[in-house]
Length: 93
Image (cartoon, rainbow, N blue to C red; front, top):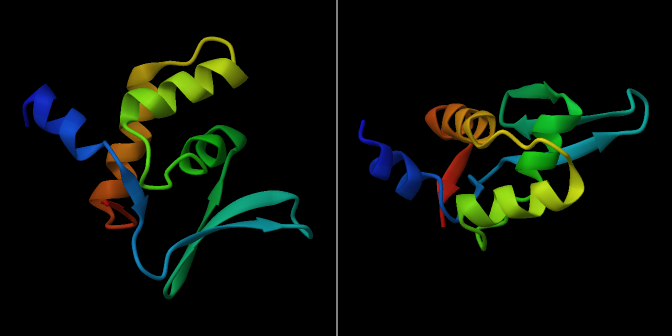
């Protein structure tokens, strides 16, 4: 896949129907919940996915993260988003 295609696919992402980000008080951890399963998220993944509201481009997500954290790696953000898109849990709005 060409780099430009990856960038287009990672803009304006939102959770697919039935998918949501959930904070578990008991486990003190974010989870990505979807029909029949759940993924435990580390704090970095939770921070990235919490920005996926369908209203931001990938570059805007990176910029917001860069305001909150030092040393934001664009490639890491892209890789996480791409892996979640491939699972069908994030879709382009």
